[in-house]
Image (cartoon, rainbow, N blue to C red):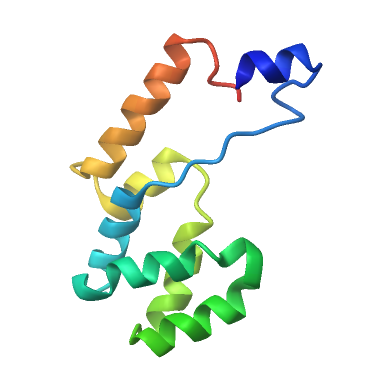
Length: 115
């Protein structure tokens, strides 16, 4: 992907790679008290965020049985854009944070971390 972008004359300032971690989302929802039985359906709803917006996602989460306050907290956490902030939310022993740190380590090792 990075090679293709480079060949097309695109750099890290033109293109970014977005990450989504089900493990992190699971830990976040568990921390907020979302029942595990709702996790899969809640993920389907959260995946629609860019397409239908926060209000519609909030409404659908509430329809599933997620508390309104919890859905609002979830949006705050989903806006987190760096590992230190995610670690502050999930804690130092978070398997999701460890997994993401490993991924970023690989990106650094392959010289693509700026993407």
